[in-house]
Image (tube, rainbow, N blue to C red):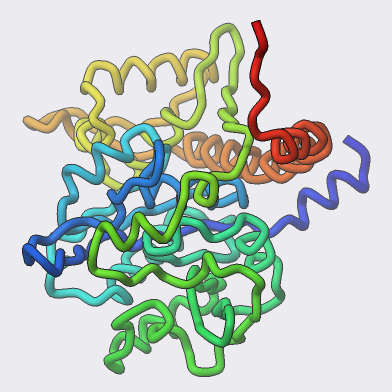
Length: 340
């Protein structure tokens, strides 16, 4: 790598994301509560669409704060390589308080992250270009605006987190815009996808979007580190993050819907290929003892996540360069029928 490309990657802003998916909505007709995150358009749910778009913009890690219906939602996201934080007091807390729970986690576990997108699942079709533009603005606090109306995701730098906590103490935070400081920069964007879909009826949600609107063509990137064998990728990275969060391998495996023995197989293979310990073990107890990441484990996780975030922008550029003519042809000729 030459000096210019190296300096470019070093200057990239590392961004994390928090999705507050803890609150239900209520059907108007039946008064039955449901999770807007689980509403479906085509082959994906709202929260899947938002996670995919955040990943394309380079978000790493993505933290989902769960509450109502957490078992269903966490099973749904088990293979999406996100960190789920359950708030058992979801019915008593505000959206702002739940957002701070996610931000606190990122602040403690990702020192490389400089900025944070914060959103609810109500913006599943926000454009990737909008996410990137929001992250690149030289502002500590940012709210996107379309057609004169504020939307999501909001963006804050790490330095703003204590000020947001102070806002909560002052009674703010009923929604994400309310959580932000009054002098947060309002950035006009040409993207209706930043406007939260606030209808309280599933049919209304579904009628406002089509499958073509919700999912962009993309490269589904999955980086795997290998030596003698492949040993580290999105799954093991999530496992290490959860071990660091839970302080226990068994609890981390439960959060991933992974068997305890399989979790240790992943860790043992990882340590064998690296030649160093990534988990500091303290045996004993019914839960299998306590565990935490070693310095090598944290360094591995940090380097891998930096690689994923940096490579995504290059993959996006290559995809656009190589696939644009093909996609233009598809749009111009949507039905290419074969004649027998």
